[in-house]
Image (cartoon, rainbow, N blue to C red):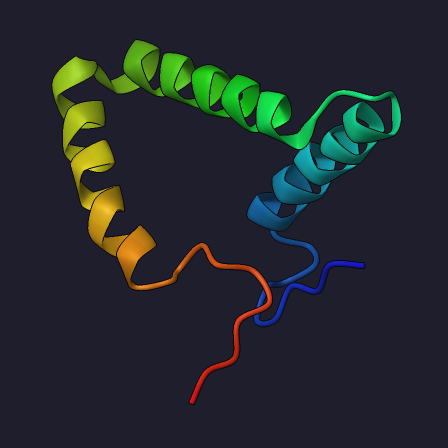
Length: 81
């Protein structure tokens, strides 16, 4: 079970996350490997963002993700000291 510390359960961001996670669970339950779900989600997200904001803005966003990944922002089940 996933927990969402600090999220307002009525917030549209939480609702969107819940919908995506439910779809993710359904895909993996149907035998789709997690890696394929991840690539499909990234492709869908980046395609939508490029359509809304353009390639330059998405390039800046993606460049900023490197440091966030290295800092552990997207690491599940990590302990903070």
